[in-house]
Image (cartoon, rainbow, N blue to C red; front, side, top):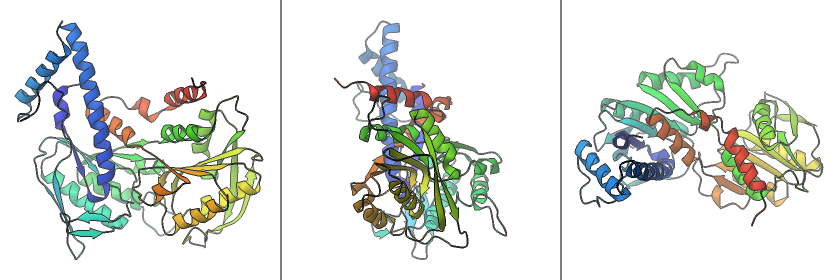
Length: 418
């Protein structure tokens, strides 16, 4: 790792993505501080000096080449850059956005964060206004920010979009557009080189890019980590466990969990009436449901990529309970919980239809995190590791294929506690 290169990494957080950006920056600082201390210890041994002297030399060369000195900082401690670029975001009353960068980013490796599904109240206009943005508001804010970064002379532009907007509009069934592809072309026209996202709804979207690269991350390790904290998944456990795919489209995802956990796989088969458009959790377009497999007396685990109104998942969990499942646990990478979904899950939980829902913080929530039945797992550390490796031009293979670390996690979880 080049110590000076960390000064060339810049993070810009759009108003909707600020919470996730702050968490990622915290992880970035921890990663770089740990790396620098480890590097100083190794070099100190090689050159027969102390780690403290080596840290001073790091700081000397950093001040010498970084362009401006670390004023009023202790030269005996590692100085990790703040990474976050100061910016001013203006929201005009007619709905227009403006982004102003308050410091130079010329030639820097810039990562722009945005959470397009953030439905919480956002403070904007330097604290003067509080608003709730729609997906399209967040998207326009992102586009305006990309344009500002481009005109400011960034060396490379990357987007960090935990939720890829319009990802469900990825294939044509009639006279309709391919909006997911359209957005990709807009990003490319604005000189975006790569996009980092989580569990994109369809891999077909990646094929629509001409030049930009898509890094599609998975939260399977983080989800299994939470699962091992609430259930005994060891081979000699007295409780039986089964992975259930909630529909045919999620088979590959749940097959991965089944293989990683070394547990049997079942599947729910649903017939839908596609003339019905789902409005809330109670109204779904499912007309019949069948189970391929056995869940009686077993703990059942379902995994899916996203949860909107939640109607489909609630029906699946109720169905599994009717088939004799003991505890029903669901995991979703992108927990939107739109409309009155939280209230519907409250009602279902009070009836004992499920035990827990595990979701990531890829979508920012406040009320949801307070629920007894909801477990939020943090994926900002994963994004920080990916950004670090991309910035240093290192391989992502071990992060994209996480079967090895999942295996280690399960081995540690099954070991007897001292």
